[in-house]
Image (cartoon, each protein chain N blue to C red):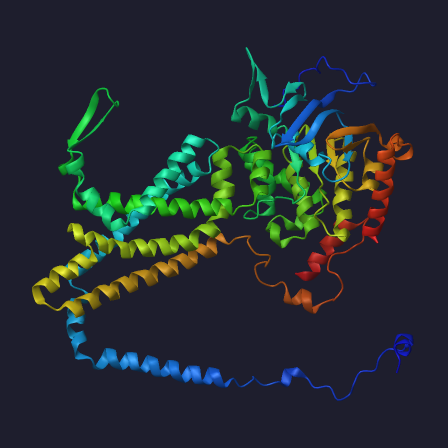
Length: 332
Length: 277
């Protein structure tokens, strides 16, 4: 058959009678995956055996101390510190993010310097530094610079392990949150800024109602990681004798020498807290994904696809409005 | 609230009864070394529909963005109902405060090429937000008015949908309802159909045509020749940041004066035909 003969053919092509139906197909066999499954099961079994048979884990001691009051108090301290550091850090982070995006360059410079400094200094170093602030600054006073003082306190009275921990963790947190929030704001389309400006919304209204809610979708996932990092980071405050979870178990194993079982107690509580936070993060993400996808709540898509295969949007010009409305009714 | 003072000294050519709503005088705009607008003069009278045509890069979009003060300007002046836009004349001429600029923007509305609806709000909230939050319209009244407008653009059953659940044409009709909801003195359209699939263009043009028939003052940057010929009172042809011709629509298409416009019209008509199939 020549090319010209093919192109001349006008009759509808016949449907072949020996065609299979792929709906009857069975899954392909993948030997490597079977091997992989076997290996993973063996590894899991090995870990489990190690955990159960190794008597040095001393599980009875873990169970005995898991709900020990001083351990629970340490856990509560860690959680509260995380909450305070996140609230203060995020509030300051919003200001720093806005400052970095400002068209007023002194604000931009100051905010960038702040973020650069507090993101660059390790949190452990900051904690020890704030705890020893009295060496550098014996008294803290409120007043006009180079002028009269209104209030004044001894730094040693102000800086307790608690305040040093809050200041250190919050400032470190603020620097990271500033970057996360800045990235979120930049992810919002310029057209949204244009539209809200064109409508005459105030800066605060367009930031809080239009830009930030849309930025949240980008802000939430790294913030979730940040909360988890902060919760774990609270273990650093044990070096300045702040009674967090790690410090609580340390106090106990310094007395009983049950180092490993007590650390297991701490590990369990850290993992439980982090798991709960992960679930909460998922819920918040779902809340802010409103309107982010085309999927209407249930009952669309399939029905439309199964219906007609013609272009769903009516090209009928004159009656465009009503034609479109009819179409959407069909889909529902 | 649109403190329309009785005209300005600047009279418009011709019709003595026509009230100028928008006046642009010698407007200049630079982007770095590039001159985007090079002395634009344009007057739009009450109830007039002015189409702005021209090749891409001619400065049409920049012009409407400057009018809505989304871009700063480098020279010339713009007046809305006789009020200088973006600047105030005290002892010396200085830029207006942010609040002052916002107050002026509230007297205009813009429909964007990319719709720019707020995706996290329902259609209804998109339309009611500005009337309620900015213009102080009571919520119930704003909602009723918004439903009315949505019915007019043929989307009464979409009030509770989110923008991304709508087709491009539907989104743009919502954007038009949103723009009209604040009762603007002038409606600015920045290539409202350029981001749409060809089969969705007509529904938007029909909506705009209906709007024009209600006597709204409109400035429409567009590539739609048919629309300009049918709906616009005046057509303005721009090229390289200048106004080349500014004439009543029928003359504009029937008897273009410059070679540039003649060749532009020929090219555009062909392109429009091809695109529409």
